[in-house]
Image (tube, rainbow, N blue to C red; front, side):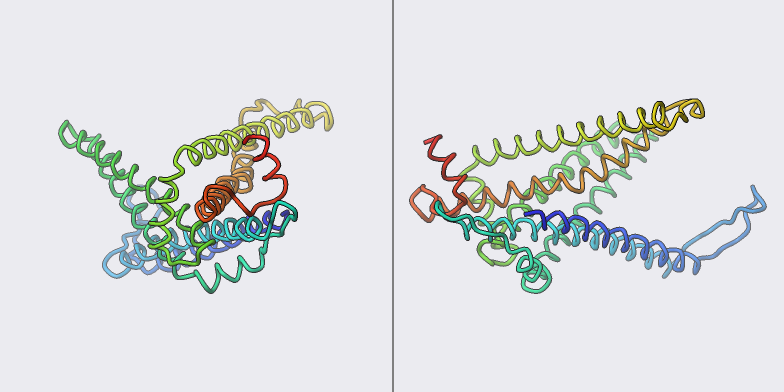
Length: 303
């Protein structure tokens, strides 16, 4: 359904608005610090957040990461819940519809606590990774080889744990959208479903990531080409540009950000659809009974 695209727009706007408000609040909190004139430049100031101000800044950083993670996970749940309603309302003879409004209601009221818990766990691992990366940066500036090795190994371990939590959260939200169970039970049951259908899940995820990567690269190439042709031939302002490197870098950056917002939902949709198919097969002796007619036509060709 095309309505799912507006979910990405809505939550991207909410994340941007939240970041702007957080920035304004951070300036106000930082103004409570001890501010003195700098000895190097007359216009510069030394800002030293101490005591309670430093604690407030830490809480603000923690709240920002948790808030953005909560918005992202809530949008993920809406995606997979919409997929689940579409799949289980469809039959081999009738194509169903996705209940996006119902998915919003579930995300905002019924499962808001579970989504907050999942985003909190991911936030804690994100902060842990940031601290380990800071420790690794400091160890590189020293001559202690043992500290550098320890910091590098710690960063790898924390990054792996963060990736595991990320994957478990995706499967938890997908299973939660189908079963209605809380976060911890959904994470465990989703993991078991993934484990049982491991080969199918890995193959589908690799295909989804490949499509997302190719899609982003294609959009970047098209936008850069349009920018160059427009500047060089349509507006005839190419002679005013000494180098296209800077503008093209900006075009690439903006295109990747915007394209990722819309194409990244494909991973969540694939996860939601796989969980639905796996649960359907497990409940019906290995033969899915739900799903749209096109799905069953392709399945009949394969089998």
